[in-house]
Length: 361
View 1 (cartoon, helix red, strand yellow):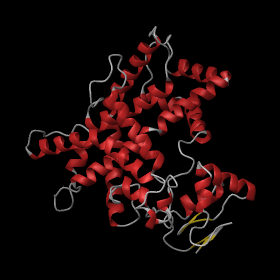
View 2 (view 1 turned 60 degrees about the vertical axis):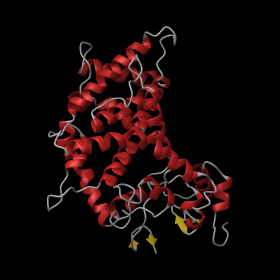
View 3 (view 1 turned 90 degrees about the vertical axis):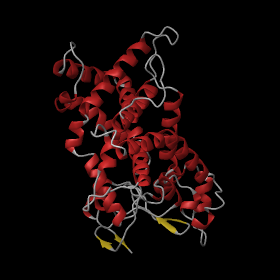
View 4 (view 1 turned 90 degrees about the horizontal axis):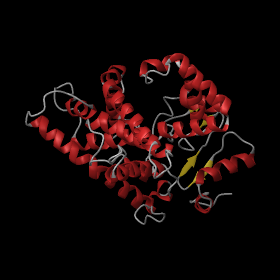
């Protein structure tokens, strides 16, 4: 039962983590859709695939926008990025930018960088397996998480490390701080902070979410911004003339008048958003997929047999092999389904009325 003005915010603050409280509430109500009053917002969680399809596909135009809230504003540097911005001209502009960055042509263009980093991962895992100090144990979470970080730094800045890294090829202190900042941003953006639902409390930062987010963003941009500033200066001075990575692409995007499409702040904010989006999902899937396979050896055995049949044992797996590895792909997809990196998708906001299985006023 909610209260006037604040709604169910007291219950939300008492029951952490909030997503478990919401799932428990829906379980007790025996419902697949609910409306929870949190401050000035009505939060509508959906757990049914059929209802989710209604929101995300059939009524996507109406529910494509993002909410105006403290965490979204801080992370997107004032709603200037693609994923966290409410629908509007800026959202359309940045959506075109992201479509360019993740296009099939761009994916093919960056193939060599991804292969190079995959080779580094194999060498790192091998060295860890030969390490007598750790008895040959490999921390899958560390290896997978920092592989994702290394890949994104390679694709974005053409460099694996901001510092020198470790002798065994592992991440250095700079990379650990960078990845930790990205994970923190992901955790606290739309993380059910009280200021997201009562904006007038933002100045007090009662739960500390705003401070945590700002510190995490500062840690991330402490390493990214100097690289971006240096690269922009190189293009302006004519020192750099050939595009080699995603940062070069973002810098050289032009509008209809042949002027730079993105401002410096837009480039910095969008790079942070791309890094946050890419850092944890693949590593989370790898970790859980391996855990599930170890617990169910027959699945691991079947996946290994497919690898032996398709790839063999005389070479490394290549991206061109992936379309043939149907069972391995099915295992990864099941890991995504069973163990999502976040309890809820990025929230959406309705921009109008809709009728279907439900009516949203």
